[in-house]
Amino acid sequence: MKRICLVVCNLYTAEVFLLDQIRALTAHYDVTLATNTENPGFLAGRGINAKLIHIPIERKIDCKSDIRALYRLYRIFRKQGFALVHSVDP
Image (cartoon, rainbow, N blue to C red; front, side, top):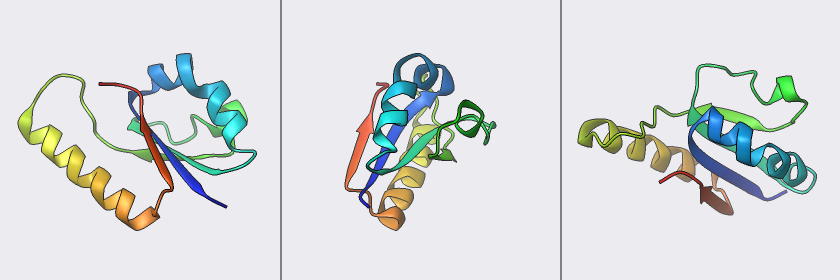
């Protein structure tokens, strides 16, 4: 099964814009949501069978935290071997 990763800065964006899409994608793909959250049960609590990875992505510009988040995302992308990565937030 192909892997897909959706990247958002916070759970609010995922909750408002992506839950239906994530739910639909899980029928055909192994879906991972990478976001800034401390709530590992966010998706499971909504009946969605997808992985959730905590990445400390901040919306405000901060070179140090941006580079750290980019490095962590790079490591996850390399390790997981996603067929598709989609980012929603700027």
